[in-house]
Amino acid sequence: GAGVSQTPSNKVTEKGKYVELRCDPISGHTALYWYRQSLGQGPEFLIYFQGTGAADDSGLPNDRFFAVRPEGSVSTLKIQRTERGDSAVYLCASSRGRTGELFFGEGSRLTVL
Amino acid sequence: ELKVEQNPLFLSMQEGKNYTIYCNYSTTSDRLYWYRQDPGKSLESLFVLLSNGAVKQEGRLMASLDTKARLSTLHITAAVHDLSATYFCAVDSNTGNQFYFGTGTSLTVIP
Image 1 (cartoon, rainbow over the protein chains, first blue to last red):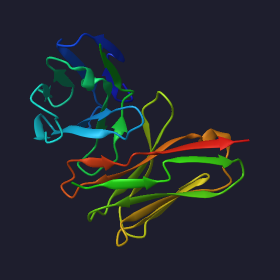
Image 2 (cartoon, rainbow over the protein chains, first blue to last red):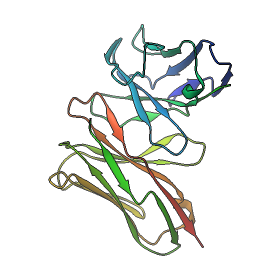
Image 3 (spheres, rainbow over the protein chains, first blue to last red):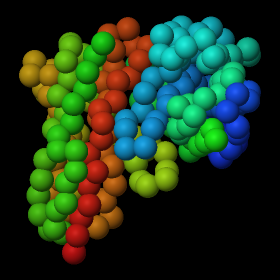
Image 4 (tube, rainbow over the protein chains, first blue to last red):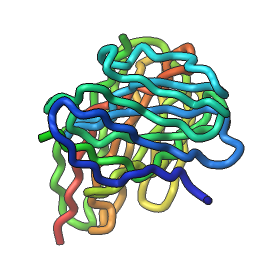
């Protein structure tokens, strides 16, 4: 597709459940970022991929969060044992290179009850 | 950690007026970006500023960067209702691995 695609657009889950959020970046973009945005806040960095490897995962809040990008294209953000505080919009962005502007997807809104 | 501050956080302005949004950041960076976000939508890239003194203009918006002062401005000229949105600045870390976003400026343009 022409833009960054994220699925699901909305996810409601119960506390303690496991969740996967998927991101399909713009074709040819080597850099992929995950951000989290809470209401009224700016996006908060989670993890950055350059190709297949996680070049920087310093923004992941704890070990319940994990992300993969096995073939250097689609990425999945995985959240184990979800907590109510994980509720937010999870944004994926891709870029042509390390210093290029970011192109964001529409986000996945996660609600943990 | 690089910190990015925007002010004002909220801005209500009348159509036809001019105003400036400020973005300050805490450590050296030569790259700054402005994004727009409409309610319930994702972020749309507006400007990419890649050097000291860079100035970019698009329609009623003009962005500038002063890396020595660690300051970027987004100037709005003769505001119209369609400009109502939240505007974020973001600074590239020196490693290029992270973009640090400000808290955003929520702009409302009233007739």
